[in-house]
Amino acid sequence: MARRQPIDTVRWEVDDRPPTWWTRSYVRAMWWRRDDRAFSGAGRTLRAARRRQRTGDHPPTRWTRLVRDVTASRLPLGDGGTPGPVVWTVRPRWRRPVVRVVHLHGGGYVHPLTVDYWRLVRALASVPAEVVVPAYPLAPDHHADEVVPWLAGLAADAPARTSVGALPLVLSGDSAGGALALFVARELADRRPACVVALSPWLDPRLADPEVDALDPSDPVLEESGLRAAARWWAGSRAVEDPRVDPLRGGLTDLPPVHLWIGDRDLLRPAVDELARRARVEGAALHVREVSAMFHVWMTRAVPEGRRTRRDLVALLRRVAADTGRPVPGVLSRRRRRTA
Picture 1 (cartoon, rainbow, N blue to C red):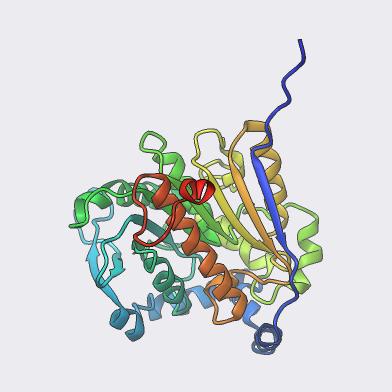
Picture 2 (picture 1 turned 90 degrees about the vertical axis):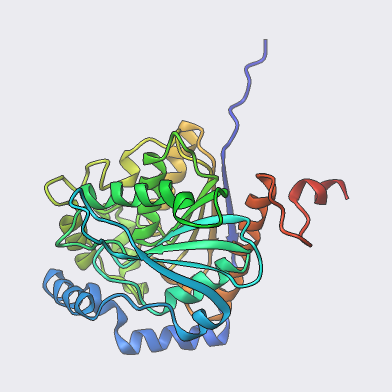
C-alpha cells in the first residue's frame, strides 16, 4: 500500500516587484530622521518609551472620526474594577459589519498607538468590519502575564459589549501586536477565531537567528539592541524563552489559520522561516506573503505598497466573512467565484 504523502500546510508567496520611487524616497527620509534610534540601546529605548508613554496613545484622527463611527470605552484591568486602558471601536457609518477584527498595535511592547495605525484601521473597517483597538498596558510597568489574559478577555467579551452582536472574529496585530495576536488565539482555543492576521510580527524576542545581524543595517525602523531590552521588560519575572513571551515556543496545532505579511528588509524577517518550519511539522495552516524591499510595518504607512497591502487585507477579511456565512453584498464569495 502506497504511503500517503504529507500535506504541506504552508503557502508562501513572494511579491518581487521593485519599490516605487515614492517609497524609495520615503525610506531615505526615514534614514535621514534616524527613525531606528527609538530602539538603539537599552537606555535610549527606555527614554524614548517613557517620553512617548507620557504623551499617550494617539486617538483616532479627525479623518477617521469623519468617515467612520468611533466610540471609546474602558475595560477594567485586574480584579479591582478600576477603569483600565481605553478601547476604541471603529465601524462603518452606514453598513452593518460582517466581521469583527481585534487589532493589537505594535511598538515593541513599549510604545503607544501612533497616528499611522488609524490609516490601517480605517481600511479594515471598510470591509465592512467592526475594528476593536485596545490601548493595552505597556512595559516596563506591565508584563505579559498581566496583559495577555486581559486582551483575551477583551476579545472573548466583545460581542457582549457592542450592539452588533456575534460576528466572525479575526485577531490581527502588527509587530509586537502580531505576537500578541498569536498568544490571544491560544488563550481562545475553545472559541477558535476565524483566523489570525500577523503583520511584520515579532516572533522571536531573543532575535537569535544569525541573519538578524545581517539585516540590522538594512532596517530603517528597528535595532536589535533596543528590541532585546524591550523583550526583557515585557517578560517581567519570566524568561524571554518562556512560551508566554516567545510565540515560537508554543504549539501551533490549536491555532486558526495564520495569514502573515513580512518585508525582506525587516529585522524580524528571519523568524518567519522558523514559524513556517514548525507549521509544516505540526500541520498548522500558514500563508506567508513576503514583499521585496519592504520595511517594518509598511502597511500602516502612506506609501503605494502600503495601500496595496491594505487592499489585500480587506479582500482577505471579506473572504473570511463569506466563508463563515456572512458575504459582503456585491462581493462574490470564493466558492461562488469558482463556480461562476
